[in-house]
Length: 204
Image (cartoon, rainbow, N blue to C red; front, side, top):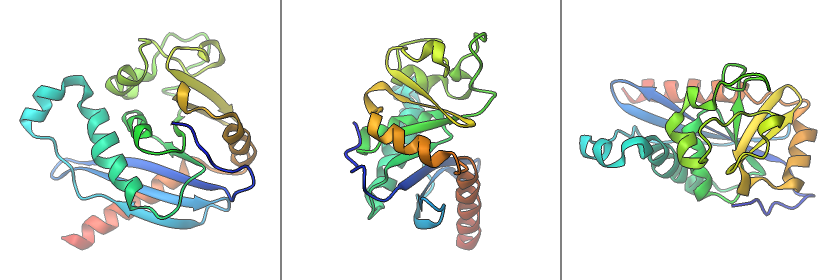
């Protein structure tokens, strides 16, 4: 899906991550921020755990199912506001793009976004997710592989981003590039993890 956000509409950035808690399962958190990085909405899921039958039947597509449908869709449906773009630090969460109109971008760190001379793959942080979203076995988030089937890469200042090719929208990209120059795309994930930890602590 591509975003239908108006060019003159206020920037709203969504941040989606998933925390794995060994004793409970996966907990998803979704934070909406304005262009000044101030919170607009926050939602988190109850712990999600796959059954043994699901593990067998879903096989390598289990993580994209859990992150995308069970967690991502649930969080998106809970929100009142529509984001300009959504960022995630979990490759499997790219599967959530099926359930939202805004493009979902994976924020790539140096350990998963190798330079043009590297043969490493984004699969180091989610082979099942990338395999499910892009047929290419060795997707790299660099300009050399910008045309890889199924995926699209974008360099935004100090960040390297990747999304499904069909989710890339030029108008939204221009707005992202302008905003990200002064926006920390990694810090909001720390807020989400801390908020999830606090909410889980309060529920005990």
